[in-house]
Length: 143
Image 1 (cartoon, rainbow, N blue to C red):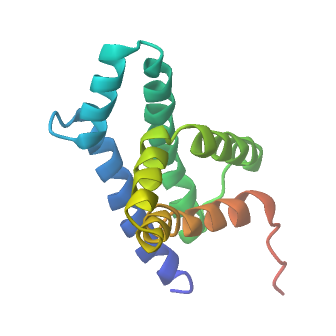
Image 2 (cartoon, one colour):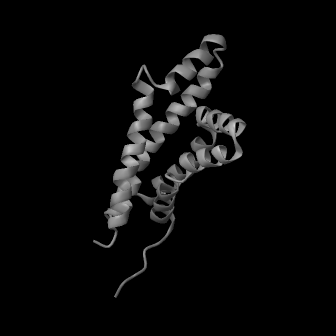
């Protein structure tokens, strides 16, 4: 079991992604309430909501690449290379709710703002590492 930490992380990442997915469907989620209120006053916020939902769906698909890497499953690298760029783009543009949460956290205190950035970013970094290594690094030939 040479990649057991990645398998363990895959399980953790699955939980993170499905909690985010749950926010789309749960009527009690602050995420959904936030966008409902914004769209009630200005319909243009619908675009930000769609970008956020697409970002969540893209992270759902990215679960595959984490497990492909963890279990050494081969697939089309060209797709995962293009998907990596799409994922970065949607993660930069599709987190309006999270960015506003972090902004509000900084108004409370600087250290709380930094902690929120860490809480949002750090759990995602290994998924990006696995995705990048899987899609862009060529395996070393072992003799």
